[in-house]
Image 1 (cartoon, rainbow over the protein chains, first blue to last red):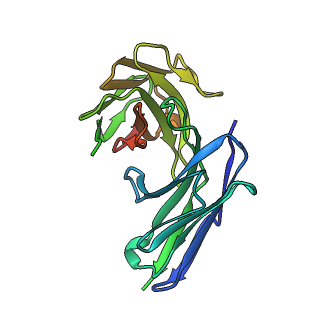
Image 2 (cartoon, chains in turn blue, red):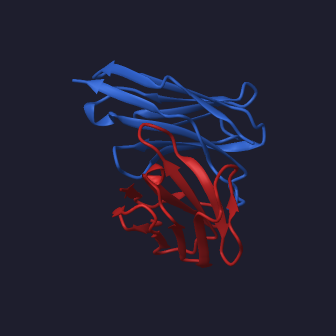
Length: 115
Length: 115
């Protein structure tokens, strides 16, 4: 089955700096890669996703890059703000057009943005 | 957008009793429901996948007789934790997917505490 590794497990940055979180996956069949933000006791919230036919996607301060050859993808947050502090999870899924395909999550990164 | 309502949000039960958790898709038909368990400061671990009208598929190490999953309709899936023990205390969260795929929609989670 799929195995998703995520690094770092904790990340502390100063407000205004950039944050980068990296994930690797093992199953070459995976082709959907979402990123979630989870606050304590809450549901994961999708912040950005990318499919394998795209190498990069950006949404305001958030961007995701994907290298299918190397099987890794990264989340980039620029101009970080204290409200970005949360736990971030990467995930991977094969062919999400088949709704029965599950998401496999990385271990999570606790991001702390210091004012 | 797609909404999954999960109840209860918190439950405390005594050891040996059973607890039922419900997830309802409010404005779409959930072809597939995924059930996750999340221990403190850990990632979401898939417990089982269920499709409407068929038996759930459980991940390795998850006892199907202990965690009963029912997906009787396209809008309702339930997880029953039977004979709960303190080690079952965790955050349980469902996630629904539909065909055609438009993302995974998460419930708000259930904090189960077994005393």
